[in-house]
Amino acid sequence: MSDEEFAELLAAAYALDGPDANRELYARWAETYDSGFIVESRYIYHHQVAALFAGHGLERLGPGDVVVDVGCGTGLAGQSLRRHTDVSIDGIDISPEMLRQAAAKRHNGAAVYRKLIEADLTGPASIDTDTYSGAFSVGTFTHGHVGPDALAEVVRIVRPTGWVALGINAAHFEAARFGAALERLVSIGQIAHLEPLDVPIYDAADMHNPDEVARIAMFEIS
Image 1 (spheres, one colour):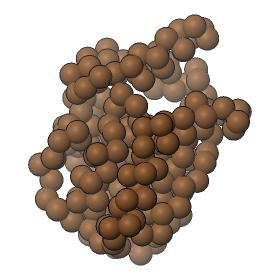
Image 2 (cartoon, one colour):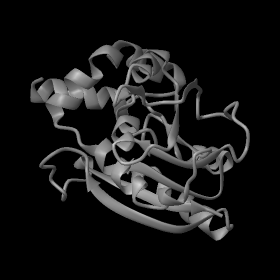
Image 3 (spheres, helix red, strand yellow):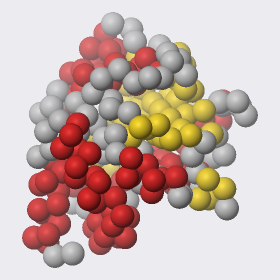
Image 4 (tube, helix red, strand yellow):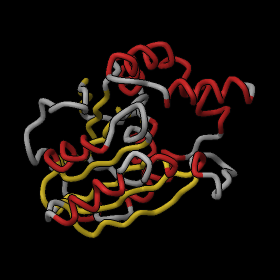
C-alpha cells in the first residue's frame, strides 16, 4: 500500500457521513481490512486498548460476566483482549460484512465472540439496559463514524461499576467534543474516575502528530 493509497483510505473513512456510508465502505473493505490496512500500516491501536481494558477491573469479573466490543469490526480488538482474559465478549457493529470476519476470529481454537450483534449505534440499540459488565471500543467513536451523542448508549448498556475503555482519535477528541461530552457525564454523575490516556495508533507513530495518536477514555459507570 503506497502512502497515497493509505492517505486516500483514511480520508474516505473520516469523510463518512451517516450509517449508509459506513455500511457501503466497510462492505467493500471487510475482506482485505486485516491483511491490507492493518498489516501494511503496522496498526497496533487494538492491542493498546485491549491491554488497558484488561488491566482495569476485569479481575473482578466472574464466569457469568460479559463485556462488549463496541464497533468490533473484523474482531481484532476482541482477539487481542482474549490474549489477556477469558471473559465472555459480545461484539456490536453496523456492517454485516465486518461481523462475518469477526465471527471467524479464534483464540486457542475457540470463537473470540460469544455473540455478534448488527446495530447502528447512532440510535438506540436493541440491547437491554445494564446488560454488560464492561465495554471497550477501538476507532468507532470518531469523526464520520459514531459521535459523542452515542456515549449515552454505552452508559445505558453497561451496568454500574462496569469499566469502559473507549479509544478516540486524538485529533478528533476535542474537535468533535468528545472531551466535553465525557466531562458532562462526569458532572451529572453517570460516569466516574475518567482518565484519558494517549497511545500510538501505529507502530513507531509520531506521538506529536494527533492523527497518529489515540486518546483512550477510561472510566467507570456510576
